[in-house]
View 1 (cartoon, one colour):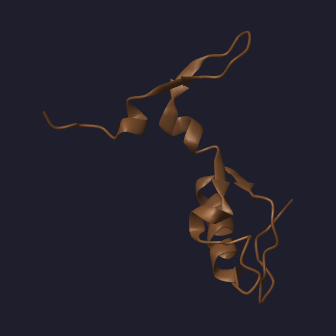
View 2 (cartoon, helix red, strand yellow):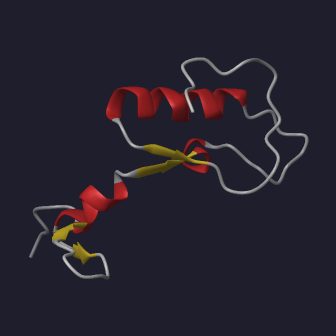
Length: 85
């Protein structure tokens, strides 16, 4: 039998704690966007991450979500635009 919806739209998530409500896993996954999702590499000191970081910032600016920066050093070759902390 073929699956009609992606798995993330079938699986439910409930945060631990009093008063937590159940939501779709796909909704939870949209809350955070990692720069690594767009190809940034915090471990490779010779990798220029400008385009990947800019793409992650642009995605959050248009689709919403919080930008997550895994620990590491990110080499860039230019300023990142539309970045607000």
